[in-house]
Amino acid sequence: MVEGPLCKMVDMWVDFDQIGWSEWILYPKRYNAYRCEGSCPTPVDETVTPTNHAYMQSLLKLHRSDRVPCPSCVPTRLAPLSMLYYENSEVLMQHFQGMVVDECGCH
Image 1 (cartoon, rainbow, N blue to C red):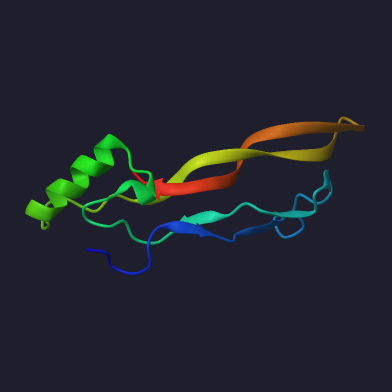
Image 2: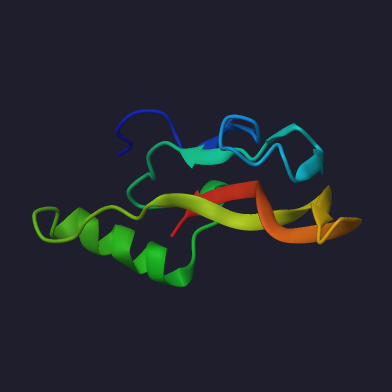
């Protein structure tokens, strides 16, 4: 049983000018961070990379639908983003971990 589209990655553009960070971030000026959206099937299957907990929760949902919520569609793997930025009048480059959704799944 699935309500709505299945859990997947969708675009989520971050524009550093819009959030007021363009003064100190040189590159990139914007990037696609992605986000996770959609429903998790009941019971979950391997297509949505569930945790064991999500699998058990989805089985309980079948039997106690009024008391157990569906697992949530969330990032299961994140990637870094390399950025050039100013800090103390210096230009630095750093790989910031966990900035881009690389995979979505049900947890």
